[in-house]
Image (cartoon, rainbow, N blue to C red; front, top):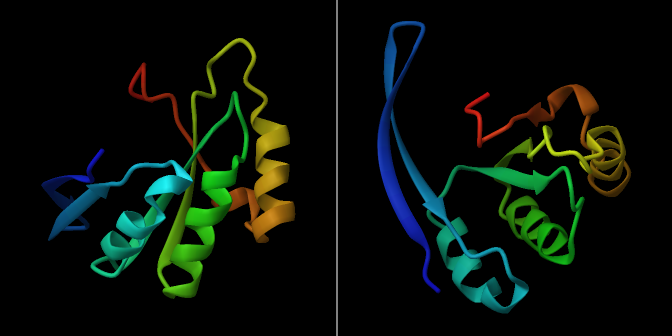
Length: 113
């Protein structure tokens, strides 16, 4: 497995930004690759599955980003699944990482919401 990259242009309030995104492997066996990728970043999207909750790789990747002093944007995905428990997972994020529940972005990537 290798990190995948993509660049996109984004406009906010009339100002244009170039976002260089790196999708790194989530598994803890790839911690070295993730660490190298984070060295090139200013911020991260901490993507958590609302169905599975916070997993070991989430914890490892959070602390890699945190120790690199990166902006961390928490994103909760798959909130539409039948077995999803977004409130419980948001509580996990709050208890483990002191993330304000109001800062968690809830998404359903399958439906583009």
